[in-house]
Image 1 (spheres, rainbow, N blue to C red):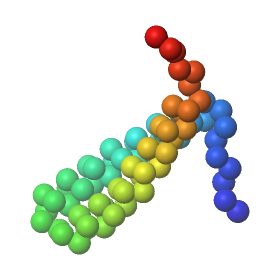
Image 2: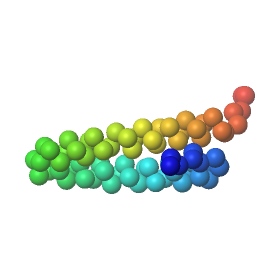
Image 3: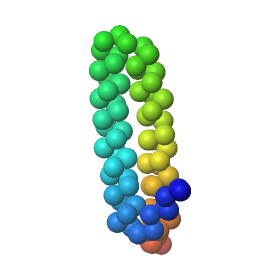
Length: 72
């Protein structure tokens, strides 16, 4: 069963934080793979990074829509 989207601002911020941590860990893994000249691991890590970045951007978009905009 698919998860429901987080409705609260705190939930969205926690989701964004966990996505950011996952992106940082994946970038470190990518650097390590590039340092060892392991192209297959680097490609696998890069492929895993794309959904993480996409989910973080989706959460940011939801947060922007929820925040009140000041007209000034």
